[in-house]
Image 1 (spheres, rainbow, N blue to C red):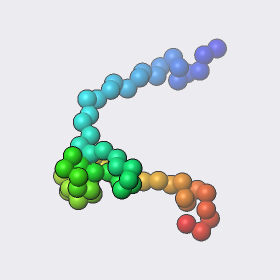
Image 2: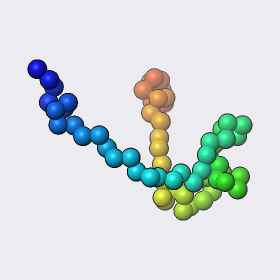
Image 3: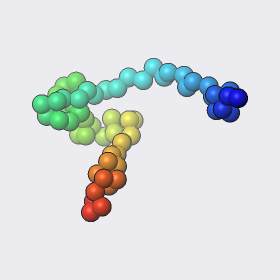
Length: 63
């Protein structure tokens, strides 16, 4: 017997997304192609959205 999800799941199509920033390991943040922090560009924030990490709150009771 095969699980239901394997019978009906369809892989998501890959979107041709262009990410306007890259990670700078030395600065430990995302930067635009001109070197400015990605957080400084409101258009990038509106277009790309945000992500959050919940690792701290799941591993430490006092977070």
